[in-house]
Image 1 (cartoon, rainbow, N blue to C red):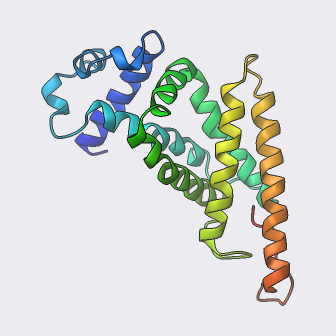
Image 2 (image 1 turned 90 degrees about the horizontal axis):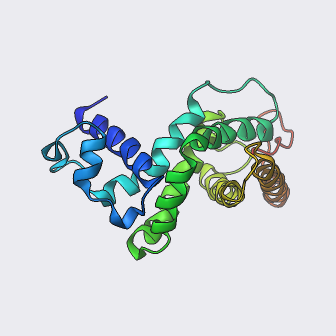
Length: 204
């Protein structure tokens, strides 16, 4: 990992720890650096508070590929498994994530960037499930569908109180089934087929 990436990763982890106990708007970069056991100068030209907020989604996206591509034959099951890895990685930092997310939703800059982050999360989910190709539907269309699914599941995750992911899993399953149905309709409309001449299995 490059030095800059290490600083951002350490800074984000420290920021999440601090945000679990304090309002994000009250946390200066100097406190984040101290919590990360880095000097403030380490962040110069590398990351600001805003950059750490922007790094939030990508940091947890990496968890989706931590266990390799799942073996299940169902595309929906594979996506369910890899996306749940993301939420499982988020859970220990729940309080900090919720605080930073609350701040992000009041910032026009971060709100304008959120669709890009959702798109990137969806792209990595598809890659982690071995579905980042144009089989069944264009990869660009699949990314749009899965970005919406992840956003809906995250809203459910924020409401969890028991730690059993019941709301998250229900929302994720519902979203993936709906995306599967819509992409199935796309295939029916366009007549996309496999090389063997059969209609392809829904890739969501």
